[in-house]
Image (cartoon, rainbow, N blue to C red; front, side, top):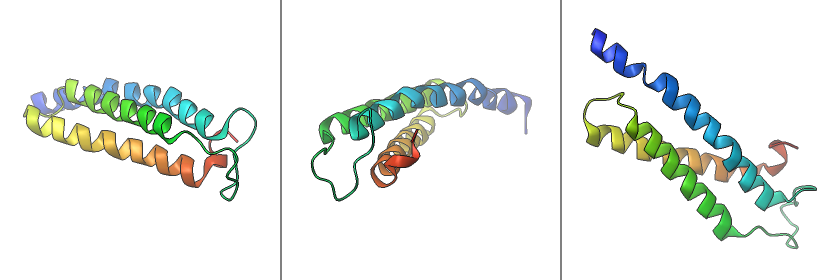
Length: 110
């Protein structure tokens, strides 16, 4: 590994923690919309369904912020490859939070 490639990879040392810090309010917002302040609804309970538009909007913002941060950090030289990987990572992170809150809502800050 060349020295310039190692220096470029060091940009991930500030980009990935920043992405992780951004996930905290996103997960809190999704969980708050899904479960409210008191407790999470059971899967069969239809009385407190979350507003899917708000949840998807929060996760869309999360995906855009994740992709933007990872695109701005110059850790791979070709911008097109960096942007493609960043968008894929942003979508994967948003899908992960959507599925984790939808399938196991009681696991997040129970």
